[in-house]
Length: 478
Image (cartoon, rainbow, N blue to C red; front, top):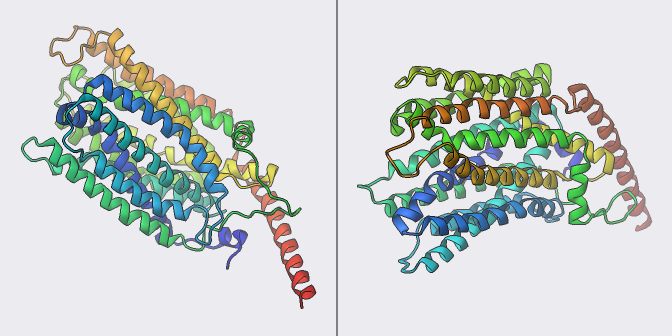
């Protein structure tokens, strides 16, 4: 059996990288289905009051955020013969698929209380099993390879399949639409996505066999190398490389939350475009250009390191957003399509941020001697979810303050311009601010190379000591 050092040094085929990353199809499809269609499904088809829907979402999302770092630490410390991440990927994929089916296939519920409790229970289960699958999966991606270029490609594959999942979650409900029967169409879409989850989580589990070794309970001194949960989380925040990276990504996540939440409102109220045409002629091309940009960002990261391309991608996206969206003429699809092209290319740089988290974990291992990918990626996901929840909660008050009247065809005259300022300069300023914070992160390409060199030397030394102790033990036991 390969040691962890040997496993990380072994070449990884593109098929293995793609097979591992394929689980992102199901993960992203579930997120898209819930974010875009769940409110309409429960308010219109099931008949739940909007206020109760929002209350159920709040409780479920808070639990989801809290559970992320807990799941990460648990997977860090799992010692099984199947590995420390892979069992959760397999179990999480199957359980998430079944819980998604129940979320979109409610029984005949009569009272508002029963509808609220059913949504709260099933969506909490979906979030729980999403955490069981997603956190160990992204943590495994950070430790599959010690090679810098291979890491970038792994996270490039993740972004590629995540966008395929986004398209699946976006288009499957429309594909199954049948005369406006929301209950049937959404249930069929959930079943299809559940099937994707079963297949892709199993594939990810199978292709990573032998590359996910169990938790090593004993360190070089023969003592258990465990720390408490709160101490583990505190050590994450003490990492001087992780803090600016996290803050920059949270600012960008807030920008993305506002952008995605008011996008259709901007196109309808400011540019006077039809919603269905916006999806087909602007949003889908944006995703297409983003996917096409992945090889470009991998090339730039290999040539110039990760920091410079990630910085310029975020900065240029912010500058473009500030300038162009307030000046687009009403009724035009061509100008927003050009912005979708440029924005999709720049947005592809996001894969470098996830890859940088894996690099930051290298520094933590060098300092502490412990591998804590799960703790870092769990905290990463928790923080982004809390920011997204805060952004969505605040956005309702912002929309109200600029004159938006929910469900009304009669809007204030200045609403379109106010939305343009919010969608353009405000969102763009957040992207620019995130890029400027990110520029202060001290983990340069040369610094990471030195960290990996020292870490590799330490790992080899420990491996030699372990081999020597094992040999001596075998001789004494003869």
